[in-house]
Image 1 (cartoon, one colour):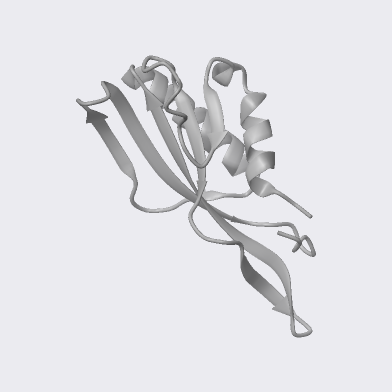
Image 2 (cartoon, helix red, strand yellow; image 1 turned 180 degrees about the horizontal axis):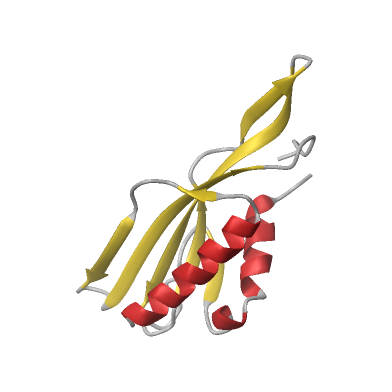
Length: 126
């Protein structure tokens, strides 16, 4: 069985500019210090069948939202660029919409972007 969310997380953790970033699935742990930057990988839907042949799905379509939080806007931008680079290499494209805000309550900048991609041909065990 394949796990694209784990694969994305593992690749992101290998990026030099993300060594001090907590990369987690689904949400930012509340136990993190408020000043610590984080990246949550959130699936937006279950994997969806795509590219059919001989009455069977040959690929899966996957959609993730990347929620970035940091106390510095420049750190958020640095993380977002690393995420974009990794996901582009995996064949994902950024979707319209998202979030680019500063939350006074948490004193953190938040950037949320959605990406959609497809698995390799015949890689459908998601």
